[in-house]
Length: 191
Ligand SMILES: Cc1cc2nc3c(=O)[nH]c(=O)nc-3n(C[C@H](O)[C@H](O)[C@H](O)COP(=O)(O)O)c2cc1C
Image 1: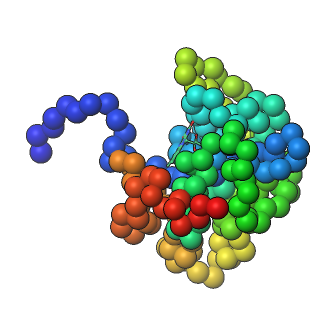
Image 2: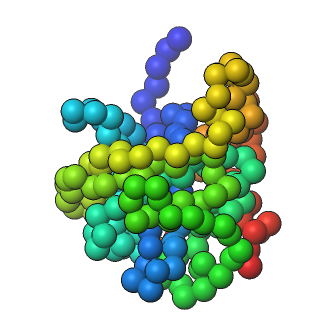
Image 3: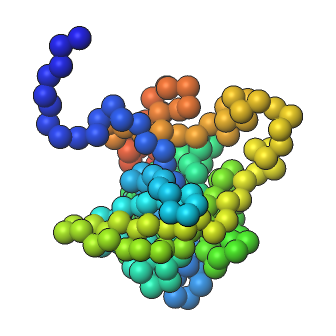
């Protein structure tokens, strides 16, 4: 098929979504929504994450050197959309009922309703003009028991958790159905 050049975007390149969890100075958890997330190898599997601009999640990662990355699935998508469209700097962002627990290895908040969480320790920070890239050691991975059992196929297990993908500022189900534009679904979870 003939190719055409288009403006630079990553449209039509689906990305997995994660909620990054950090503790504020007062011990309150804060979550933000992120998709610039991938993997690297450095004597073991690692994570690379890019955060742009000024935001509370970035301040807290800089201050503590640790954060959690909680996989976004269909059942928590309205909550995730809220965390991605509400600034942590606004005082009441976290006045919303959620259940969290502390990481098993690191002092990071884990979102109980996500089926998979990485506990991440920043090993290198690469400053760019408008953002920072964090190279992280994966210190622990926590999954719901239903994911760790081998008695169901990988296909059955991933369909059961239904991870969300995003491109073109739109959320998509694991099966490829459009679920809404960024900023639309948060209306269901707004406090
Ligand atoms: C779908 C989606 C993906 C996002 N991905 C990123 C990202 O990868 N990097 C980034 O810097 N901000 C990203 N954001 C913006 C942050 O989620 C937003 O700035 C949020 O307020 C961060 O939380 P905080 O203010 O509590 O730190 C994304 C927002 C949405 C809606």
